[in-house]
Image (cartoon, rainbow, N blue to C red; front, side, top):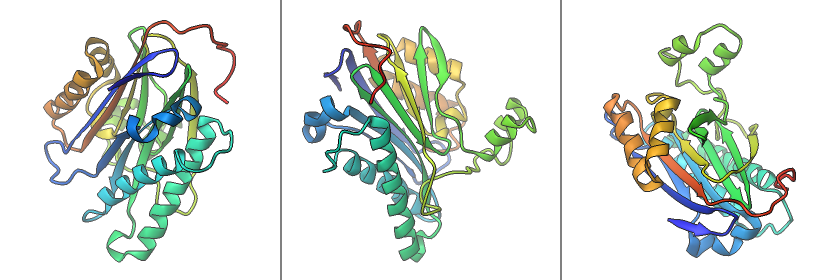
Length: 269
């Protein structure tokens, strides 16, 4: 799907796949649809999100979908205050965290459920990213991939302090252990990132079922070569070719055509 509501022509697509070894898909994703939210895009931007659930039985699936639903309801909800996308996203994620936490406390079969989240908003010529956990956002510009988000995981923290190398972390038995997620506590810290967009930028949101199997360089090559509706399938197929041990979810955004006269020094607020 595509739409012109900023200085760019935005094309977006997403898909999810259970992978090769899982019988249940605990990921969830959504792209803000025109029918429900297009009248708010000029003011609040267009919202995209990927969630990777965790928990026994179907609890992870419930947590990820509850996060997505709550976030979108809150982001485009009745709060008409003139908030920046980053502040509005943070409020939406905090509301989702509390909703999951409270539901897990009430339902014994859902105790301990949680989910990661990575979300993006495109408004005017600005990209705002928010994340909790190890689902990632990448920006590909001039063919070069940049990982925007920082993984909230045990291995990422060990790499940061020099206790593990990147290679050791990639194959470590604890690489799926997250140190921050939605639903495990009543409060959570959200990372927010803002980037001025340029024509030709490609943005990827993904669960770790992709990023744990496919390198940033391979991801960038696919994003450069294919439009979003084809790139999503190519990325999922490659992760499955590499074993597909986890659920795989991706959203791809292409921003095309030169921007108009905008003040690039001015932030998204």
